[in-house]
Image (cartoon, rainbow, N blue to C red):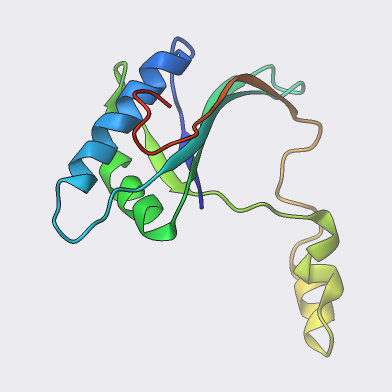
Length: 143
């Protein structure tokens, strides 16, 4: 599972992000019903919108199993990271080729296409990975 953390501050480093996530994971692992989960990798992405000039930072956390990922989302939602409240959710990879407005069979095609004429996604975003680190074991001291 991939966990998306939104609205992280520009000043967050790889080390501070890893320490923040590890603190949340330790709280999950303290519960007797959970076996120790595995954080496989984490990355920080810088997203630039050339039309508005705005820049935002997001983090992607690759977690070994879904149960740990869902618990991590609950732990991180609403927490403060370097003074800014963050939100976490499941990351969904979407493809333009799987647009339901175009590929639906039957009479619902026209209703969906007529309702929304343009794509809701922002066009021409420039996404670059500023920091990425892979994790090899569950006992690694940092992500």
